[in-house]
Length: 364
Image 1 (cartoon, rainbow, N blue to C red):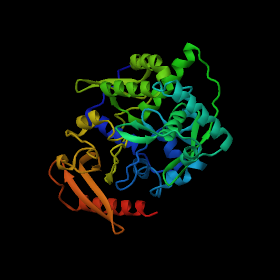
Image 2 (image 1 turned 45 degrees about the vertical axis):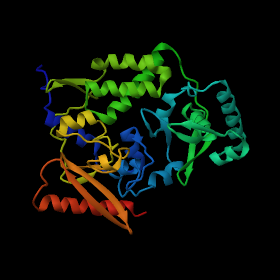
Image 3 (image 1 turned 180 degrees about the vertical axis):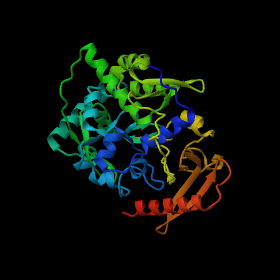
Image 4 (image 1 turned 30 degrees about the vertical axis):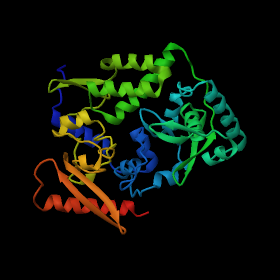
C-alpha cells in the first residue's frame, strides 16, 4: 500500500477553515462540536464567545449564550483558558484543588464561604460581601473584593459552579463531582482526553503550537501536569502528523487535510481575536504571511490596527482587519488591509452581506 501524500500548506489552511467554520447548526450542537468556547468580558462590538458562536449557530444573537446558559448542559470553567465547555469535559478537570497561592488564613475563609453557599443556595457575590468582612486584596495590579476572589477560587477548584449571570456577574451554587479513579492509567487517560479536546478545536497545529497548548493544559490541570506532559511527548503515536514546509504538523487521526471536501465559501467573516481559526498566532503567520495582534491593552498612540481589530476572512484569505462599533444603533466600520484592498463587485457584495449579518446579530 502506498503512503498517503503529505498535505500542502494551502491544503492545511483550507482544512483549518473548513473544519472550524462548519455549517451553522443549533447552539448545543455547535458547542459540542467545538468542545470549548473561549470567553472574554470585553464587548467590542460583542463578547468573544458571542462572536465565535455567531459564525457557527443559525440565527444567533448577541447575548444568547448567557440567556440560554441555565438550560444548556454546559459549564463555565477554566480549561486552557476561561470559557464554556460540555459538562462531561468539566468532570475531567477535577479534583483540581483551590489555588496554591492561598495561605492557611485564605483557605479558612474559603471554607466559611463554601459553607455559606451550601446553606444559602444560589449566591451572588454581594450576598457574600454582606455576610463577611473580607475586605479587599491586590490582584492583577488592581483592587479586588476578597469575597469575589474567594468565590472565583472555589469555582476554579470545582467546589462551586456558575448557575447563571445577573447583568454579567456570576451567580454560584455548590456542586459535587463523582469520585475519580486515581490509578496511573486513569489519570493518563483523563489528560489525554483533555488534550484531545484542545487539538480538535485548534487543529491542524504546528508542533510548537501543540507544545504551547500542552503548557496551557498543565496550567489548567496542575494535578495532571505530569500526565499531560507524557501525552504531549507521545503525540506522534496519538495524532496524525506530517512534515509540511519544514515543520511538523498534527491533527486528529481519521481526518485527511488534503480531502477535496474541505471547501471554503466566499463569505466575508469578521472573526473574534479568540476565534479558533485565528487563535494560534504562530499558525496565523504561516497561513497568511503577516502578524496579527490584539491591541486592546496597547496604549492608543501605539496601536497599528485598532482597539479590537477583528481579522477579516474572505474565502480562505485573511485580508486584514475590521474595527466595528455601534453608534446610535447603527454599525460603523473601519477596515485595514495587510495588502492591496480587493477590487471588484465580489468582495464588496460579500462585505455588505457580512456587515448586514453583524447588524442583525447585534440586534437583540
